[in-house]
Image (tube, rainbow, N blue to C red; front, top):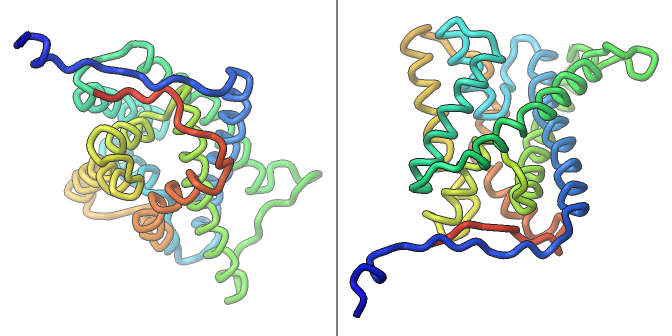
Length: 250
């Protein structure tokens, strides 16, 4: 028996079954859905007073961390992203410059789309859309709660699509991908819960420093409880012929 051979773990990668053109098309679709979803959670939160909806979990935690250390959102999201890239490398057991640069590249068009849709829903293009109005009636408040939850659902669906395409990922979604297939046997909901540990640590640090929370609320709780399940549901029912591409396993 070759002891050295049996003691070594070899990384294998599952094959890609779709063309690069289709992969890029699915990726662009997922970026748009993800951006719209994130903006819906942010904008609906600002239209209800007092605010109680909140945004998606990573977004809320990073915003709180930014307030605590006096960073603007750009530097806060970049710093948290780099820290998450390092964590992902530790969990995978090796560092890949290709994957790290892909994580960083993901954030550029994503950030641009976030800005565009935020401007759109806030009324920066009145000739096209005047923006979402303030919620001043129970009916409007109920509508914005529904839109906030729809935003969380869009994020979950988008994560499902671009994780299956697996060209480049946001570092937080790459973390979930690693946890899902290396540590949780493919279970999306369990991996999503585990992936919330780093932003929870950030939020606790922010709470200790500032003694306050911002951007957390009903929508954050909804995302915490159901976003992983939505991703697993979308794997089966949204573009069901799209299978996970190029997954690294031991």
